[in-house]
Structure formats: structure tokens, C-alpha cells
Image (cartoon, rainbow, N blue to C red; front, side):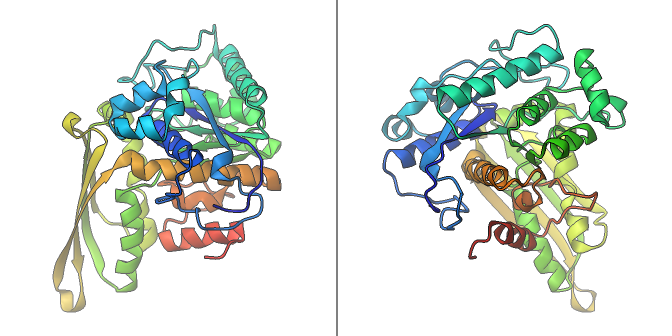
Length: 397
């Protein structure tokens, strides 16, 4: 579980009542209660000085649904009642803080547990106050913010308000409609000196204005869109196909899922944000455009969090012979995502303690559309991403 630091690290989730956040919290509370099951946690067996122990993580956060986390977890159906009763009883005593909501940016998700503020500037002040209160009341050494909220629609990235700190500040004062809830959380975190990660496809700390602010304030930021299932498999398989000189003629991907993320993606505008991040990896790895790379996501309520990802890959090999590869990944979306969220928070905290601010490129392995420094294209090859992370950690691997 790493070198014991004794440092208490708070993880503030945006979307705390969602399936991923409740699963992550339940898993850590189970560890705190004595479980030694560390399955699925990628950094459980590495020893790195300064990396916070799982038992030293404390949770808080915002959600439009004000129900306690035990009720929320029961509704999501990822955890059994026995899981909640036995190992994660702390969920019953945790309720989310009021959150930012916007039907303009996320059409299908709403709730009554809203921040009451007259404008963007006051909203940011409320978020910053929440972080400060969390730090003080929980006696924390550091706080990290992780965005797990539902996917927002794609903004107009050419809008001047998103392209400089000065314009963004003026946009906050004017409650500019180009500034999304995800950006408000990111701004509040960065201005508070709090590391920020975006596990969603939404545009947030990756707009030029907030990248500039993170550099100026030397605050670690990372994202975006957690790489858990289908895209993770692509970044593993595509390098192998390239190494064997098997030309990818087409890659057809489809997903069905019925959780709250799926409901959000049932809105075409939010769906496009997801497709923007899922569709970028193949060409980069293979070195040529896959013209017939098709990605489909369907909301199918009966499946809940049990997602099915199905891929058909058409390849051409020696002497022009054509072949096919089929991949059918039946997974629990939140069970894959929750451990990654935990590790991202731990690494961001370590970056802050090392004085390493700005974009944390070493976290690329956890994201579909990794944020990178200096305008370079992102590295998508899973093996290379893993080396980047472990080299930065200074860990044996």
C-alpha cells in the first residue's frame, strides 16, 4: 500500500452521489475497516515516498442529489446491501454539499441540491468556501478535487472568454454563458491551490485560460475522460497490431449501459463530448487514419452499471489476407473506474507535495484524451503511458 505518510488527504468529488464516487468511497472505507483486498488498485503494490496511504484518504463533495451516499449507492446497484452494511457503513453518514447545475450544459441530469448564488463569481466563492471548510473540519493536510459529474455538452472553444485568464475573470463577473459548471469547479480549485482532475469528457481545466492559471499558480491538473474499458483495450491492442504489421481497415465499437452516465449521454450534445474523446486514440497509435472507426454509445436502462462493450476489428495481414478480431467486454463500469479515481487523487497530491504544478502528463494512462504540456500530441500507447507514470513516481515496475 505504499510508504506510510500519515498525511490526511481529502478527496472532493464533483458528482459525489454518482456510481463511481460512491463505489470509490465504499472501497476505501472497506479497507479502513480491515479489508486487505486491494484488487483493481493499480498502485497498491508500489512503494513511493510521499504517496498517501489509502487509509489516510477522507471524502467529501458536491452533488445535485442530496441523498446520503448509502441511499445513492443502493440506487446505483453497483454495491450489494451487504457491501454497504459490512464494510462501508460510513456511507450512511455522508451527504453531498449543494452543487452547480445547468440544463444548458447537461440536459438530462438535474436535482434540488443546488448552490444558491446570484452569479458565477459568487458560485466560485461558495465552492472555494466548501473546500476550505472541508480542509479545516476534517483536519486535512491537502485536498484534491476530482470531477465525476455527468458529461456536459461541448462548448465553443474559440470563444475569447475561454482563451485567457483575463477574459475568463471578466466572464466570471459577467456570468458568461460560455463558462460551464465543470469550469467553475476547476477555476475554484486552481485559485484555491487545490489539485484538480477531470475524469469526465467535459471541457474544464483544459481550456487555455485555466491551463494558463494552473501554470501561473503551480497547481497540478490532469484529465480528461477516464480510460476504463473499451478505450483501454484499444490502447493495449492497437500497439500489438502495429507491431505485427496488421493493418487496421476498420474498427467498429458499440456500448450499452444504463447508469446515470448513460442517461446523460442520451442527450446528443453530451454524447458528442464523449465521442470526441473516445475516437482520438487509434490514429495516433497506428500512425495512419482509420477511416472506418465507428463508435456508438446507447443508453439501455435494464443494464444499469453493467456495461457491455463490443468491438469488431477488420485487419489485413500477409499477402493481403483479411482477418477479424472480436472483443466482448462485459464489465461493471464503476468497478473499473473507482480505483483509477483513487490513484489519480493520490498522484496529484504527490505532485503538489513535490512542487510539480501544471499539467501532469504522467497520468495519461488513466485518460482517453490526456492533457499534455507544450502543445504536443498525447501519447495513447498503454505500455508507454505506464512507463511514463512509473518513471515519474520513481517506483519499481
